[in-house]
Length: 239
Figure 1: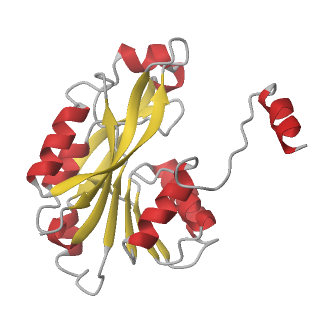
Figure 2: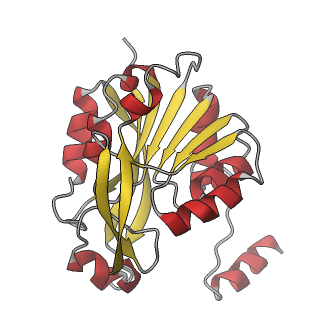
C-alpha cells in the first residue's frame, strides 16, 4: 500500500522518504548537531529564517543566533524568530570587517549577494536576477562577539552568503577556535563574479584545521540536471 501511494505521489512530482540521515538533509543536520552536542548555531545569511525553522522542526532545541542584512528579509526573520524559543536575530550582514556595503537583491530574495550574479545562475534560475540594490551594514563575527561566546562548548557556524563565504571566514579567525562545525555554500561553477569555487573553500577549511563531514546537494540547472551548488559541512579535525 505504501509503495502504491509513493508511486502516485511521484506522478505529481512529490517524493516521500524516511526521516533518516542518508535520505533527508534535515535528518542529517539533526544527526550532526546531536553527535557533536551543539549548543549554539550561528546562522549567517538567515534570509527569512528558513534554516532555523528546519532545525527547530527537526528537533534542535538549543540556541540560534541569526544574521540578515536586508530590510524586508530581516522584518520577516524577526517575525519568524518570535514563534520559537532561544532564537535571536541581528540586522547585519557578515564579512571580513565592519562597514557599509551594497547588496544586489535578487527577485527570489534568497539569492541576493554582495557580488554580481552571473548568467550561469540566471540562465538556470531567472529568479536569481538582480532587481534592486540596497545599502547594508556589515560586521565581522570576531568584532561582534568579541570573546563573548566562551560559555558555549560546541558551536555550529552556517554561512549562506552567495559567493561571499571567504570574506565571512576572514572575519572569524579568532572565533574559529571555538567553532566545532562549519556549513558553507560551495559553487561548482562561477555563479557570482569573484566568488570562490568549491576547491578554494575546501582548501581554506583544510588549512584552518577542518575536514569534510558531508555534502548536501542544493542548486541545480533543471534543464541539464547539473549540480551548480552544494553545501559542505566541515568538522574540526581531532588531534
